[in-house]
Length: 311
Length: 183
Image (cartoon, rainbow over all chains, first blue to last red):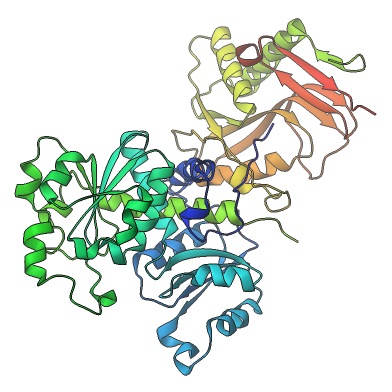
């Protein structure tokens, strides 16, 4: 008999709302899509009767391309929207913009927005499946899923793996989603960075802080390096980029001085020479490009599992 | 098994049927050099492996590739059921460009799985020819104009009945059972 099962949620708003079984289901489905995208013909017709709107109220390269590729590989019809070239600049509200787009008969919405909770808000007010592609400093669920998936691919399992998240944790939706995702899958997560960039509530998530980068790297199996999000910093969190790099930048000398080989990840975009040096980003310990490849497979899995029933 | 259920093929008949199908293939193909077998997931793959084994028992010189094809992403009933269908693995480690393909499934019923299989197969190249071999052909309820080239056994059944093929390798015994519905 055909095995059937489904996600416990109707939308993908954040990892917070997912169960461990949901994450496993997404990973297992992504395994099949990874195989599909490595074939000579990379397209399957599953979503041929679905229209998806990609609404990006904030800049993005990787996530937008990755979603669009995933949608097209599944044969969905795709419409794209970027706020910089739209009526939002004329003062239209989020709900009006989205309702206008939905009246063009859209089944799913992939949205990135600078305000935390924007995806949740949308899910309460419009009749379409919502996928959060990043809402302010809140969550970025597909990034966390692809990160978890990449670690699972490298180590076979997430259970008991030690993961350190280094850098601008306070402004990072990737960090928060990853903490939820990795912990649900049984990994141990700690963060590292200057205390001004670590949120005060972090201990309530069961996450310890290590302030010394070398100690943190010695502890972990996997290091996730984060970009300093200057666009979200309206005050000075540290004296200078140069000082940050000296204390929290990962270079080859530091990586080679460790007693074991750790895996390096980065959600992108990379500021080479700030949080990570070029030779580390391009080293054989880095799985940064695998993350990007897995991103398409994970997003295909999420779209496939959320597509729902035709009415 | 309920009293009203019946065995369509017992282990002896099952074995004879597999042997006959294999001989039919040899008769038609003689040389299998440009031929591949593709079993449809999940249960057509058992048939594919079994036929391959039988072919090689009859003639040790026969070398033939066997692949497993999953049609989940190509099905036409996605989004028409309450839950998404969870796929199986596709394992085709060869290209089928210009090959003669023998597609195999355990039961042919509506023909929709085979239709999806024909679509899914194209991702691996353009075959020279495609033939269909099934162990059980449930007649009268085809939704599409699809017929098998090699048939183990024809069964006349109604929609509410269910045909299950059991394999020695996973279900202890080779046999085919027709389950009748409970009223």
